[in-house]
Image (cartoon, rainbow, N blue to C red):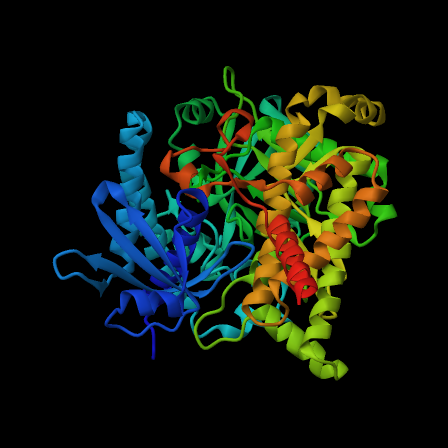
Amino acid sequence: MHQSAKQIAENATFQAFINSYLKEVDCGNWMDMKEWLQEQRPSMTLSGESVVEMELPGQSATFAVEVMYRSLTGRHRVGCVLKYCDQRREWVPQDRLPMMIALIHELHLMAKSNGCHELASHYDELVLRLIESYQTMASYIETRREDGMSLYSEDSSFLEAEQSLLFGHWLHPTPKSRQGMAGWQHPSYAPEMKGRFQLHYFQIDREMVLEASNDLKSASDMILHSLTKGLPELTVPQHACLIPIHPLQAQWLLQQDHVKEAMEKNLIKDLGPMGAYYAATSSIRTVYLPEDEWMYKFSVPVKITNSLRTNRLHELRAGTEIAKLMAKLRFTVKYPRFRMVEDPGFITARFPGKKESGFEVIIRSNPFLDGKDKGICNVAALVQDSLPGEHQRLVRTIERLAKAERRNLEDVSMDWFEKYWKCSIEPLIRLYDEHGIALEAHQQNSVLDLTSGYPASYYYRDNQGYYLSNSYREILRGQLPSLEECPELFYEDALIQERFTYYLFMNQLFSVICRFGQEGLLSEDRLLAWCRQQLTVLEMELTGQGKAFIHHILYSEKLSYKANLLTRFHDVDELMAKNEQAVYTYIPNPFTLVKEEEIYAKAATAAV
């Protein structure tokens, strides 16, 4: 049956929302489908493997959700929804959007009953952003639904993969929420719409400018060099330099009093849009030009998922310092399949009394230049659901490899997963163990080189995601004394362990395991057992904080989980909160669950 863009978007929104609710709020009452059908005898036909009943005591309501695939790693695939009608004493079909709003209302009632009146007041914000995300997603799907080759081809380019995330974060209740971006602006600035745009340039008096660079060129020279490739006649006065700004941020800046005053004094000159046409990557605010050796990461006046996306001064410094530190540590020389997309320069304009002015720009290296960009794909794009009727990207890759090698899908899948583990998961753990550096390596920050089909190398990107261990502080400062000027980079290991658990395991690794399981390529329990075996061996080898981290992963009954639904419900902007702290909760540890199943299976076999 042909589905409209709105139906596809509603289904994707529902999948993300229900999985968030089951993880963060109430895990529900699970039953085998046959058992539930015999007990409840609903009038409609259900074909899933399980049913999860969800009680809403605040509203005296009960829902039943059909589960087509139950995941050990927590991203279930759900189907039909039923609501129990007390008057008729039967289950009746329920539309998905009203159910999601009912669940948000239940959160609201729970917060009120707990005396959290301030937190309860954000109920309307979540409803607004849920609907806005759903409508935005529908518009992207409508635009791209006939674009299957660039969305899911295993031969697609880096930019095509960056522009392919039609559904977004698959464990976030509002994955396409973009407050602050008007509908007419999406075709130009949203990566999913494949837009390209010129950057907006300001000429700024050098006395106002703060810049740094690890390159032979200064940040301002890097910018000028990139711009004059296409505009060779362009000249800039010696007393000034150019700062590129995202067009959305430029509109915001031109309305600010501090900018208007500087322009009246001729300290700032608005040059408007100039130069080459850039494209937004998956984060929206990092822009890419295949021919340029640099990308730019901007502030934008848009709330994307949880936060208003602004570059902060300490993040600018963090990029240059970490680039210098990694060069001294030579970790990527020791583990050449692991790489960092560096942020070796920054520039901004300073104003009295303002820590950040809005002009903050991060200069990012571009390892994916034209000709070197084929087969480069972030993990989020690799594991995402495909549009109805399209072949999922990871499945395409495995099937092509199996056909070329004349091997079965299961063996190829296992080889692919082992190579993925060796270039991404293991080096990330070793980096923390050997040097006390943990990275916010979620699936969108994680980029794989899949030129051959198999993962050849892993790239980490994001200067907002560095966690340096306080227990390694003196050693790291010995390597790079200037780290003393970046106290914001250092965290206690308890907090690092919480964040690293979520980003590396819950968000990245488990998304890959879940996709293999959902597609029937390899079962989740087999992959979890294999990972546990690898972690057990690794734990014996390691000697630093990585050893304690692995022990925690292997033996804790529950693991920390970033509660995106509760973060949204409480309207927490994690980039502005203390320690950039979102709401965290704890969920059952899949590694412990699999171990318990193995012990039970062995006991049952022995009894026979």
